[in-house]
Image 1 (cartoon, rainbow, N blue to C red):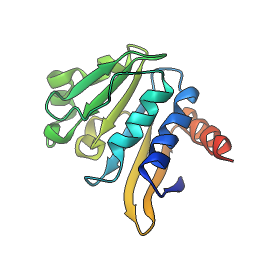
Image 2: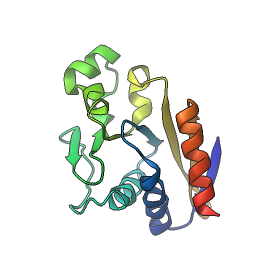
Image 3: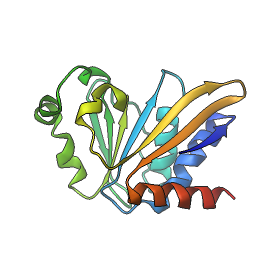
Image 4: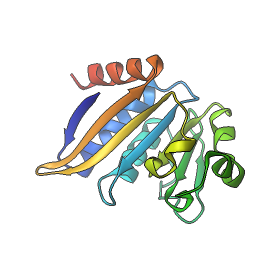
Amino acid sequence: MWSVMAQTASETSRLGKLLAPLLEGGEVLCLIGELGTGKTTFVQGLAEGLGITPPIISPTFVLVREYRGRLPLFHVDAYRLQGLTADEVQRQIGLWDYAERGGVVVIEWADLIADALPDERLDIRFEHAETGRRLTFLPHGERYRKLVKDLQARLR
C-alpha cells in the first residue's frame, strides 16, 4: 500500500499521466471514492498519457466508454451495477471481455461490484483531505506491486 497527496486537480491528473507509460495492456484499475474525489480527473490524465485525444467524460449513463490510444482504454462506471452478482455484471456489460482485449480497464465505483472484481488488480482509493486529495494505491498481485513501485520511482 502506498499513499500520495494531490493538492490540485492537475496533480491528480498528473498521477494518471505518469502511470500510463507503465501499462502494458490487460490491467484492471479499480477506482474507489466518494463523488468529487478525483476519479474521473485521474482517468483523464491516464488517457492523456496513453495518447487519447477525445475528451474523457464519466460513463455514468452508458456504463462503458471505449477510447483508442497506445492501448485501448475501457472506462467503466459501476455505480448503476451496484448489487449485481459477478455473473450479472458479466452478462450486463461483458466486463471481463474488455480485459481480454489487451487494453486497460478502469472501473469507477469499483467497490460497488467487489464480488465481480478479479483477484489481481490495482485498487486506488480517493479521499478528500485537508490539503486536496489522498490517493492510496493497493496492489493485488505481483504485477500490480511492481506497477506501484515503478510509479513511486517516477515521482522521485
